[in-house]
Amino acid sequence: MMGGNKICVFLMSAALLGSPAFTVAATSPAAKQQQTVDARQVLRASPMDDIIAQYPTMMSQGIRDGLKQTGQVPPMVADAVGYVVSNSFNSQKIEQQVAGRLQAELSNGQLQAVADWYNTPVAQKISRAEVAALAPVVWPQISAQAGQLAQRFGNTDRAKSFVRFNRASRATQSAVDTTIAVQLGLASTMAAFSSDSANFETLQKRIESQRPALKGVVEQQVFNSYLYAYQDISGAEMEQYLRFLESDAGAAFTRVVSSGVKQAVIEPVESIGEQLSQFLAP
Image (cartoon, rainbow, N blue to C red; front, top):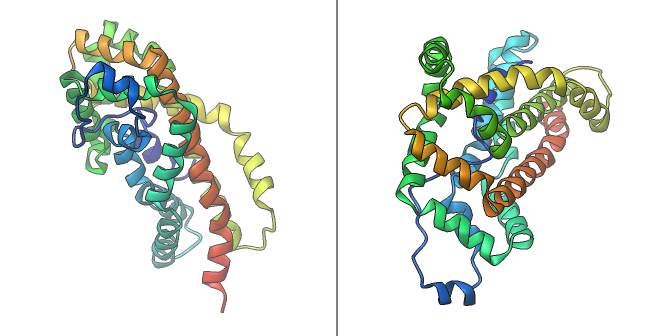
């Protein structure tokens, strides 16, 4: 699972993270019913604009680290490949695609309910904790503190609530999806350096077959990150968050964003091998 471990930690709650940097202006109930809620603003009020902005770096680092771990290419070549991969992903385009799906698939009321949640002090506090846990410099801390956090929370309600959180947020599912995308990008890259003529569909089927094995590893990393990110969030605040995730609006938002990001990430991965072949051509 080359390059996958760090990616899994990064995506511990990829389905739903919050960003306090953007707020939606308050309006009267009557005005809310008359106005069409802009899905782009809702997306920016949520954490996903921050997550999506990180995708080019995240995918590049995952594939670059994976290449270096194989030892089959010089480090300088791996870094050059990372640059090509990074340029293959356009975070603005991904955001536009996801916002378009939200606008088409969620009702006006659902979009407003999501915006209202992310405008609350509790949501913003949780968002700050989540965004802080995303920083690459924090990844080693999450791994180093995993045992300590597991001992601290043990059989507490926080640990027991993970199953509920994981199901509602689709955190493990999203992390597995992105880990597979990284592995697919890595496989396409390695094919460009070898005589392997397997096409993208064949590579995709081969890597998708690893999903059950990946799930167990990823879920443990998601659990570690869950304990780390929410360690200073009270039980009452966490309950509010879980209720939002489980609500009609929260569940619809999570579902559409998760599937939208997955599709938007797979599309550029498909072209990586071809771009690298051109890059490496004499």
